[in-house]
Image 1: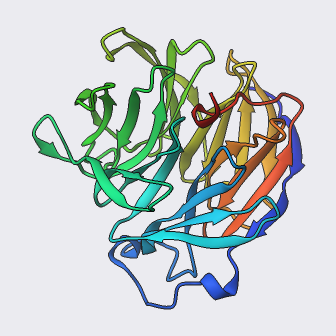
Image 2: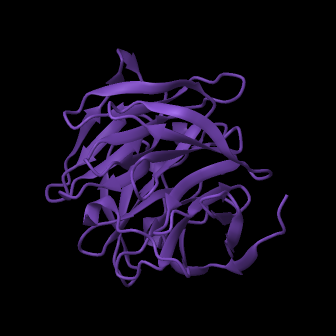
Length: 303
């Protein structure tokens, strides 16, 4: 459909040090997955106001904090499977936890508490990612092990009072989420469909005019998702080892390739330098970086 866009290779920013490699054996999240028992499996990057980059370590219930010089530290460990991570503008750290639901972490005490455990009277199948609206409301994906044969994933909205409701049901592996700059359009990665959907937001938190915006091929599927300051869409293609950058019309503009592995999963724009992105290369425990011509918008934590 389109010629291959300009391609460039990301650089290594930092990686999980050997002192933090997991040595406790396999955990339930790893069962049936192709990663074996890695020293870490990082995901969900996000910056706080002090310039620290946070990321999760899904199978081992850990959250790391990474200093501006790349130094890793274990920030918290708990009984969970943290996946997506976003930081509120009040500093609280919200986590889409595959095992526990939506969790919230106090950055001062490092206490981990549940925020949403059930939706419409049903336990979740496994939250994956989340995004804040400008009003501080949340959309999150409840992905679990849903696929085309058993599409039981959901898109959920949480209002400012903490009330959660399902806005889309019977989805095949809903994953990453991103909003356009105006906050009127939500993009949703459908992992097992290898596609990106778009939909308009309603004032009540619901969605309308749901459509397929992009159809990808190869790899495992689209995982993390962001929009930049010009509403270009950055799609992390897990299993293909690259980040696609598409225009607001869906035209491929650039492709960023990992120098390490194919299991890259999620992405965050820098805050000290909004032209710079940070990518989790999950199975290798590496944070990659690249500088782009178009800057990102400040994350919700900084607005």
